[in-house]
Image 1 (cartoon, helix red, strand yellow):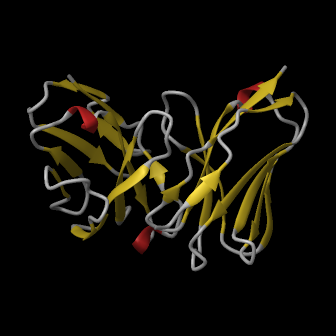
Image 2 (cartoon, chains in turn red, purple; image 1 turned 120 degrees about the vertical axis):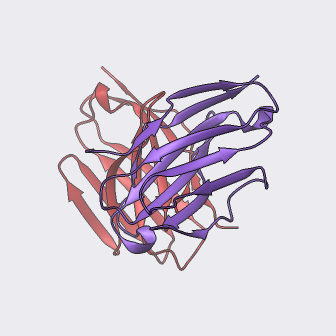
Length: 107
Length: 115
């Protein structure tokens, strides 16, 4: 059974701080890793994807992948109240999702 | 269209009725996926199409669930003899690559409520 684990939160950070979201996965053969943002009542929206070990930056977002530790994370710099949502970690294809981490950015 | 389109957005049915949910993927996307999302959970995989071929249906929860994509574009997920546990949001996603290793783009989903 392929599993993706996330802390459900809520994770509360003050506006302007760095939010750090973490995810572990069970399938060592996993090759593709995705972070989706989901607002309440809306569909998942792709934020970042990463395939290789290391960091990948896109604007305020940085995805980090460590295949040896089976760990992937998402950093959000200069967090804004509009970043408040559930962040879903997903692995491989078809996607295996974690349950999501609820992030709350406090103004 | 520009994105993945799903219809209807909301569907209410009585237990025992059959329902059909439609997905219109991004034009040219070869891979199409269906997911089921229960409240407070992450989406769970149901089935995968590459063009018109259904390559993986391992996530379909029972033989009451059936999906098709006859011309390799629009897909329909059908649920027969609906049960209350079928109540969920059904999400469709498409991807430009074979196997979907490229990111998947989701539609707005169909919220199904079984009374």
